[in-house]
Amino acid sequence: MGKNNKYKKEPNFSIKMDFEYGISKSLGNKIRRIIANNPSNFTLYGTGTYIIGEGEVAIIDPGPDDDLHINAIAKELEKEKITHIFVTHTHKDHSPAAKKLHKLTKAPIYGFGKHPKNFNKELSFVEEGIDYDFSPTINIKDNEIFKGKNWTIRAIHTPGHTSNHICYELIEERVLFSGDHLMGWSTTVIVPPDGNMSDYLESLNKLLNFSFNICWPTHGPPIQNVANFIKSIIKHRIRREKQILKTLEEKDNITEIVKVLYKDKDPALYPAASLSTLAHLISLVKKGQVISDKKITLSSKFKIV
Image (cartoon, rainbow, N blue to C red; front, side):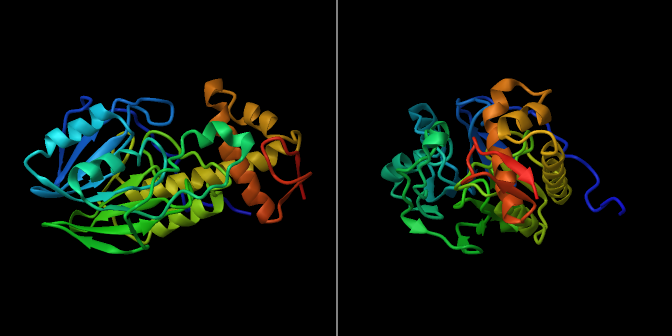
């Protein structure tokens, strides 16, 4: 059986960025960004809030419940009007500031619904990062179009990282705002039960139906060659799945699999790696390639069929 040459390269990640916290930076093409001072292993330098247009503007991912960040947005736009507040998904580094900005501006909040309540005690450390209080004033649909002053935005439903994840396209400039679905500095963490690896791969392939000039994730630097980058992420996930299957020949649990596959990584990243490994295993069980000794959890034992 020959090699699959469809996707030739692994992702080319970068962490290079030029920014100051709380200061608006023009990115061209009617786009500005303000970065919140909330760096972490999951946000890199912090949450990037995007401002689209001039005069009457849209916000994409208002960010965390951080008064300094919210005030920086308000100061930047004190002579302009916010007409739309778009949220990519319901994590606390993306959506909580929407409520305060709505109170300040009366601009409607757009999102793909509330976060489903699938509480899992085993994943309580993840639950702390979920914004269960988020509630959009307007629920949006896949492929819905929104028109503003000299800008048009398309919503693209991209479940995987979360079930309610939305990417946004600035149609005039063919610019993608990818939230956490695509990141130029790291792979995306998939957290079951709301996160779903099969959905994630399907959503990546869905984006290949579009032609984007550039992609701006909510965290980190832009992605320039978008289609090739998406293909490299797909290849990475396929390769990781094969590595998991290979490791299952000798190891039967997620803790041991992660130690093998991520032996060169900082152990502080193992919890996140365990979640993505769990997501891969759920997908493999669904496809009939792997079985579990019980209901699938982080502590389950697995074997190849």
